[in-house]
Image 1 (cartoon, rainbow, N blue to C red):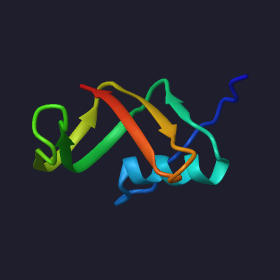
Image 2 (cartoon, helix red, strand yellow):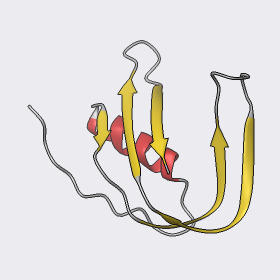
Image 3 (cartoon, one colour):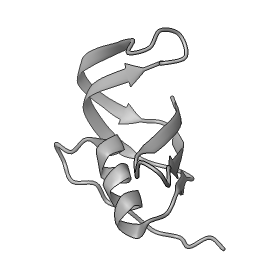
Length: 86
């Protein structure tokens, strides 16, 4: 069963880390259906191209579309986040 949550992430917070902390605290995976707001200092990672490859933009951006799936690993308590953002 799905349980809906509304998350407000404080300014100057890392969005991915905030979602990871929430997921670990609730001991569940997440599916982000939508997101809105403004972000700054955005780092985009694309590990499928080159492991560790990333590019950072230092400015202010409006979030037009954000969706994500976050899955917990049972063994390491780590997580994977698959994001699609525009």
